[in-house]
Length: 401
Ligand SMILES: [Fe+2]
Ligand SMILES: [Fe+2]
Image (tube, rainbow, N blue to C red; front, side, top):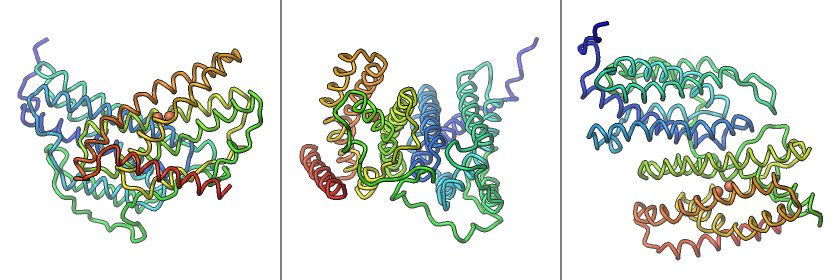
């Protein structure tokens, strides 16, 4: 068979422009899913979103690496007012139903088709690598759209609301963007934005399915009995509540547009790890015969942190809370081992290793965040300040209990 005519495929500058747009899109989706993680009320959808934002981050990392291989070093700093507008608009909705509908129901299928077209148009002989990466990113977008299309909440009645007015507006925004040329221009939507929609402001209080009772202090930990089975139950209940940790990290992803991509990549990893710890907690509780619906969903840790600047939030979480967690976790491993509970011991051992990496994220990024924010404090001064914040929050919680 003769080789395909090279003229049928995009020239190198166009391919570079498309890879750069695809990087910006997948990076934007990573941050968008993080920002809305606390606002989506459905527990099982949150677990999925935590995985999806990590998938977007992997697409973005692969695309940026390919751009660097092709000596395109400006991709990370390229800006697109149209793309920023599009993602901000998709974020600026009333609730989780509207977010999932606009993002997963309307935006992702369009992006999947666009990425797949870009893959097809990339030269299969000279640049199969870019072709494969664009197709892999398209496949991930398609998988996320398919998840939503089949989604029914496990803990809430479904199906989710799908507003025709919102779909029309997001579609008009998408129609205003020149995807085919590989360039963006400011969208000029032909239909108006629904009047009741507000500009996205980060979520102050995380949302939960209505079937769950919510609580503002950890009454389960407070009332643990002095026996192994009860201590173990509380350890894994507390892991289920790491959802709040993932949600705080997701909010930081959205609130730090000024930070470099490498930070967003590590933060996406951190966030998806905390989602995994939440899932580990849920799974172990179920293995122990416990029903998650009988337990309160805690809101206070996220809500206290939501009032802080991202730099204080991140320092508090990594260099104070996570750095201070090892003694307790090692005691849990020891007790699980002594009791012959090898499965619980294994869960907790994975958790400890993840937490070591998360503390290292803090050591790496807190000094850089201070510099990016032109914050004159030293890391140690910031840690001391965050310890005071934690102490005050614990006092408030003790009073509430
Ligand atoms: Fe964790
Ligand atoms: Fe962690």
